[in-house]
Length: 434
Image (cartoon, rainbow, N blue to C red; front, side):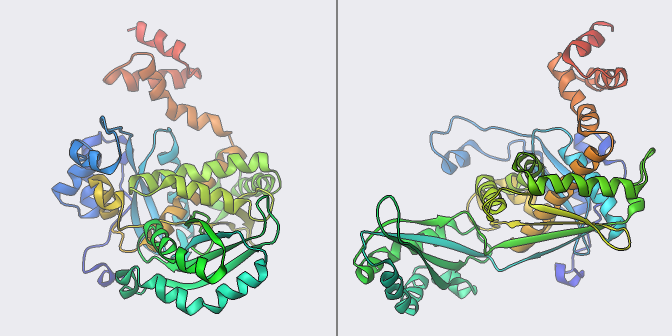
């Protein structure tokens, strides 16, 4: 994306040398400077006092306080030719480090390429109490234009922005535990919103008219979180040389990654863990930007089972020239307007950090992080195993659990990693030895 496309602002460089060795304050300053953020934005990213209790009290019910998680930044991301610094709210060690390192390797192949379909969400209107489901379907379709027009009258602002209801579908269930049923789907372009409120409101509005048309009873009228019309695709091409280790050639590592992914494609027991690793990257970005991570999780796993058997959300292949090619495809219903994205100051700052301008752009970046996380897991499984690197990064948590504070945290963490015994017992011994 050109500088002009960014409103004349300088381009971001997501490669920040020595980032992991900085103290949090210095790291935040470096991140904010690289993204061109002002002091208010930098302060919001710190999280200190960002969410006033009065604001929190307006966001959910029965508020008694606030719950914090670490907010990190994944560096090195090059997506569609543009650099991004990606905020990630997560408690699990190794996630941010793994994503950043894989993004660094991905730059050798040109970074990540992403694309997104139009932001179409579904609202479902369930019709029961009918005896002729196929005739009911025909009756609904005969009133398609009327229903679309009525739905769009509910949100004229959305329509003015180019969104709104674009069509309907009708699913027929001739047999069910409660008799014949049809389900009307409203297909709504929600633009830069996640879309739940817009589609739910349209479904509620149409319910009485649908009952008149069908002679049946409308029960449910609500969105579907299986957003299979709102698909994001991310891909990456890694030259074999980028995967070289001290003991393995990159071509061997690439082959091992393909073989590991193949198990996830055919075995749901492996696929569940494989896809959880993808969500390790996706969920933290969703949380950091104030989006609904539960909706994203539900959609992802439903999509992974769309064939009738739960399978991998990614594919990994080796091209004729030996290049490792990874692809992720999944629903991604994210928004940059409405909800916590416009209420929570840190969520707003996270979007500014990435310089996000559309929900589709956010979906693409988030998918790229998910693909990077999957790449990291497969690479580790194909080389030294998943635990070695993870436990080294987990050592600081172990040191804190053992009672270390201040400078002792890093000292104890380094000692237990060097000893090859990342345990609370060994950490206590190191503490007591000083």
